[in-house]
Length: 107
Image (tube, rainbow, N blue to C red; front, side):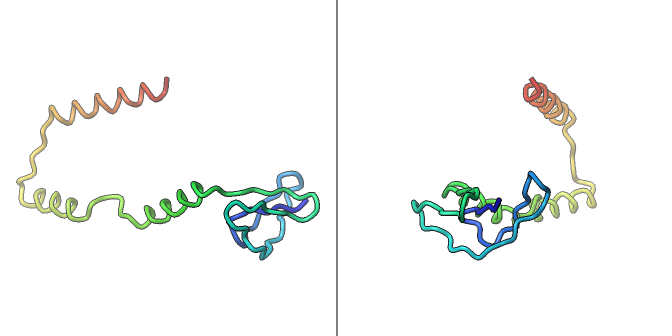
């Protein structure tokens, strides 16, 4: 059985029933609203505009740093100069808040 995923060109699809890989083909992606016609009795998957948009967002976010380099530099400088102050009450409050969120999520 062959498979075709609309909106994703040149894909390699893993077949679940035999563990074999379907060969990639260079089919033209159908226009929005056009029904994908897969060859004789094969499966077809259509990616919505939302899925394509989410993929674009995911790609864009992959290039954004996890931490703010300027803030990290400021904290490092403050630590090196001995002027970084920790507010133990705030740290404790944030830990309790995090525990509450974890508990709520696991229920």
